[in-house]
Image (cartoon, rainbow, N blue to C red):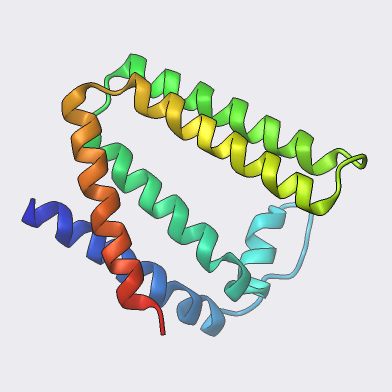
Length: 143
């Protein structure tokens, strides 16, 4: 428990420091050999802070849950379906921005529910504890 808390705290600290580290890094010029994500991340580090933080936290949670190979494959499929559905919602010009937000949130909630359903009872409890810890850290970071 103490180690998990420490790892989450460490991930938060790294993610908070990342924008300042990237800001000091030289901007990479765009070239065919440089992926756009590298150019964008170094050119505008503030815009990618939340994305980097979310990805780091998701990776930490996945490692902490000790998923089986089958669970990892199912989780990846859920994530891909959810991402595809959200992309389709964003591309749907017939929806108003408010309708898009409602549909995106419903899609995310459904994806989270599907993920929780593939976990064992012990993994679900651990996920709940990790999420509570994350909420506490997020509250500490708010001004």
